[in-house]
Image 1 (cartoon, rainbow, N blue to C red):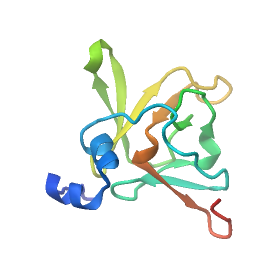
Image 2: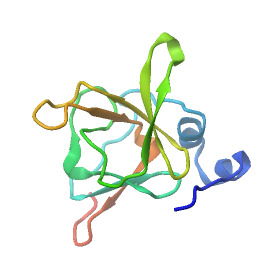
Image 3: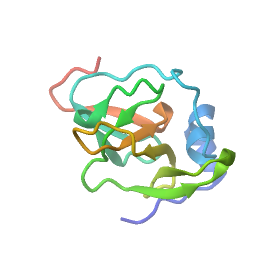
Image 4: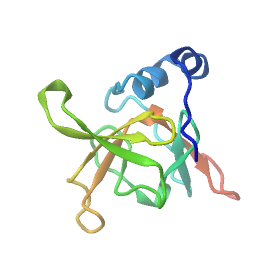
Length: 136
């Protein structure tokens, strides 16, 4: 698939200010500031380009203040980059299709699954319920 490339002005016109700040400028939303997502079956997509990134089945409550997943969806265009901002070394995750900053991944997730915690900004993803389920 071809990479999605848009100008800053195009992204600004398409995204609300907070989603633009987080996804296009590598920002972070305040912890516990994003309303919860439905618990029904579905897929979480990139807020910028719609790429399928995470499954509801892989979401867990980490109590960190951001949506958390223990893995990406099979074949998801999630790429990692070393992030040395704010005096720490972390692993940033971004959408490889459009470059949207999603959040970070840490090796402190559930040990009974992958042991990973994809700590994702709520404004960087959208929830699409499976067909036949109620989004609520």
